[in-house]
Length: 179
Image (cartoon, rainbow, N blue to C red; front, side):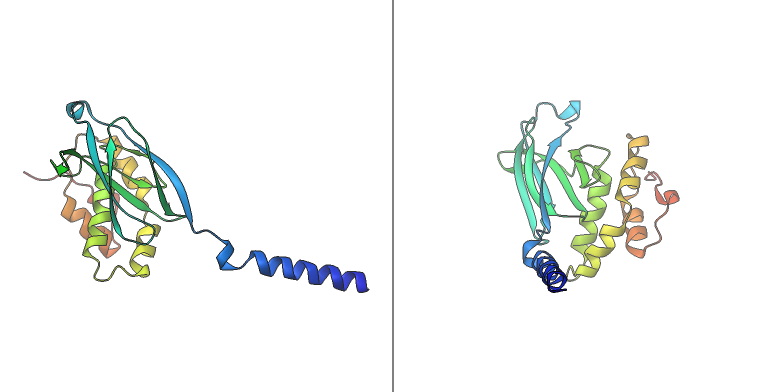
């Protein structure tokens, strides 16, 4: 009997110690890379922008052929956008992008998803956890897959952002931009 009480007490202490929040890291290190399109092959440096695990806006300068490592929130979406840079100045709008953990290579096809994510974060009044929980639940993988099926299509970004923000986004909202 004493042996059982001791064993149960030991298990209880073990569970309490290892279930404490201070022992659980809510971040992970990930390695990302760029898939630079041919028309940008002469661009040596790229500026990568993202919101870190504390939801702060960050930038990283990356050489075109290098991978880079960042700390991101575990089990949470994080959008990365890349643009060519010359002398520290950004030359154009988003060219490459992805939403981690659904992609670890910044591609042209992933740029739309990262632009939508970042636009919603920037539009958020105070960037509450509620906003980021909403963004974590959105199916970014499906959006990136749909964009990859039609890589040369220019989509109506405003329409997509409004639909995602309203929670009414569907495949039919991926309409090409009317000229």
